[in-house]
Length: 258
Ligand code: NAP
Image 1: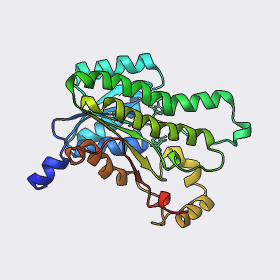
Image 2: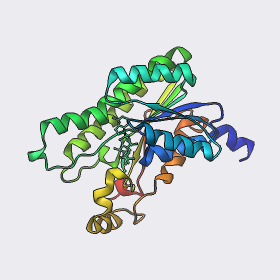
Image 3: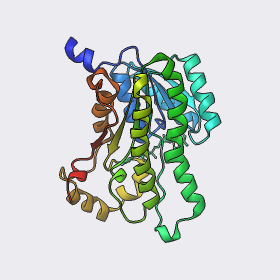
Image 4: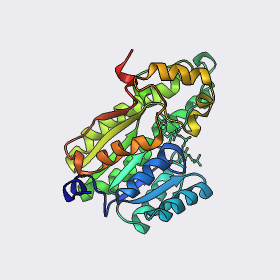
């Protein structure tokens, strides 16, 4: 990398937490931030998968640590963030990525599943975002990226609660950007289109859905998780020092077309 590009996009010396990075999109983002030079903290609820991603990143020459906690528990989040700040160092970057999908037609949607989904997708962004921002505020510096979705803008049958949660994450992103901008903390959203991960297993295995998706997406295909890394590095780095409260969709053009 030329020194100009390195100054803009390099993350050397920065410490980044990516929630839900023991698999799927989070794993790709944690790996990408490490390749850009950041020390990465890998999170998930399962020790073995967290350790596997930490080992993968280290094997590739990166620096990574594991932090096992459940982002739906505010007390676990507070303890987890305090431990990272003490053992790894001050967080410069947070990617709020952990999230779940539960598909059921709205008229049959169980109340407990609604609460499970809202807690995982929305409450977690508030819990982790607030805990990390409280540490960043005295330092007057930080970058937070909330993983939104094309469903922050568009609905689909049987996922109304997911759409509501991701629409709320979009607006929470704007609220965080407004309240914390004066402390030098930039908050942006990254909105993936359709990517092949565990969360989308049922859709990936459904040939009818895949051919519908290819027709509906101007680039004509599923996304690969590595294709989200460039946008995450951009929003984490000094290449985006005046970008705040923005939602960047990485979706093959799906939100541009009807
Ligand atoms: P995924 O493959 O199911 O991976 C989710 C990750 O989050 C796993 O590592 C999981 O590990 C962790 N996790 C889940 N609940 C957690 C909790 N309560 N606390 C801590 N970690 C937790 O999902 P994905 O497809 O990568 O999705 C990641 C994010 O992108 C989600 O916010 C999703 O809504 C969003 N998104 C995905 C797509 C897509 O096409 N895949 C599109 C738009 C947006 P454990 O279960 O072991 O904890």
